[in-house]
Amino acid sequence: MTGRPRVYFSFQSPFSWMALRQLEERVPDFADLFEYVPFWDPDARTRAGLDAHGADFHYTVMSKAKHLYILHDTKRLAAGFGYRLVWPVDVAPWWEPSALGWLRARELGCERRFYQVVTEARWDRGDNISDPAVLRAACDAAGLPGAELMAAVDDDRIREQGVAALVSAHHDEVFGIPLFVVDRQRYWGVDRIADVEAAVLALRGAGPAVESADLLASLPVAALATVGSFDHDEPGGCG
Image (cartoon, rainbow, N blue to C red):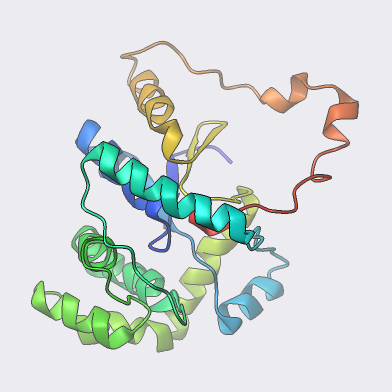
């Protein structure tokens, strides 16, 4: 896909939170330039919608060793950026309240404020954003219509928008978060912040052009034939 630059973000991922916070600080109009698309580990109802569209969810549960590394790496990155981090404990995660709530907030024109409320609740305070009551209280305290936003999980129309977002992620082959799509190039992870910033400058003609060709076309056929052979442990939605 080409067109407007896109970023697939997740309230679930600390790397998504840090990468977007960095880019929004570095590029003041980043949120206006990019289309934000939510990505999350779907519940059974959302998965059924994906199945109906013939779409996969590119996610493999990570190993314990990799999970422990990510816990350490997240703390290290947050400290390096000077960000306060309270690690949340996800006992029974349900991401639809935050993801679908964001889609409803977008309709109401308050998605940026909702995003801020949710990320502050999760990463500044360690709140359980899988609990609609917790999110509703946070939204109400911020002057947002908490009840209406949390009702999104029971709204068939918003549910369809959620499925459409994950179908888009399927077509863009999103396997980890955050993932940025600029022209034909994709940038994955918090360590691609500088590359995304350079791509933005190139779009504006304020920096050197970024390669727009399909880089896979230059790889040997034999190398492409092995794609997926060793991919048994990818942290997916955690970035």
